[in-house]
Length: 210
Image 1 (cartoon, rainbow, N blue to C red):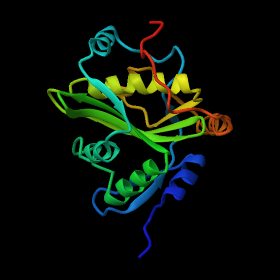
Image 2: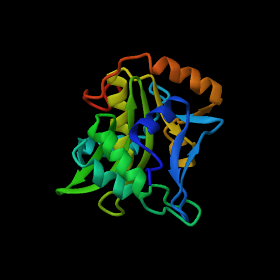
Image 3: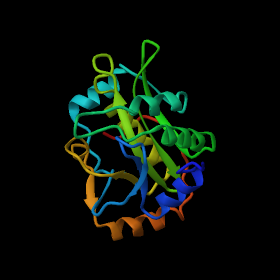
Image 4: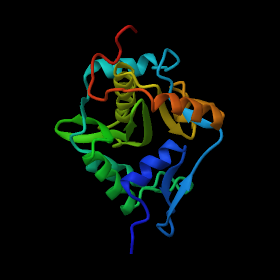
């Protein structure tokens, strides 16, 4: 039986404003769009609290990129609550690991004492980054996913990305300045982004200029 998704299908879906999720009970892959669409600002609207700045500067976590992609997505594949069930099924994990091998999917990872304690992953396509999920380990990974997000935004800024898709807004993400815009405006922004040659492989001080 043919797989329900493939790397090529995922990339095509993103370009049309759609993204896949696995139905928790049946495992069936469904495609979603949302209106309004949430995006992470890549300008001075992105907010970092003073307490989080201190954590970032403290060096509590060693931040790496693309060294443990499969482990990051597997750690993200869990129920958050009864209302927020795991939507990352085996077919999604397999497909995104293939996207990683193809150079499209990336992870930002927080390590502490040699252990992966937090991270996030998504897909970079030209000047657009499609954020998918993040996780942190309670205790040693407190604030780890937040620190990874700060590093992600810095990398996207330096690399010349135009848009960072967050799909849905929630209270956690709006604290960083994530905002919503009509789907038609998002698609227009996306058109500009995919005509832009951005680079993933850039890094630097994530708090420079603050």
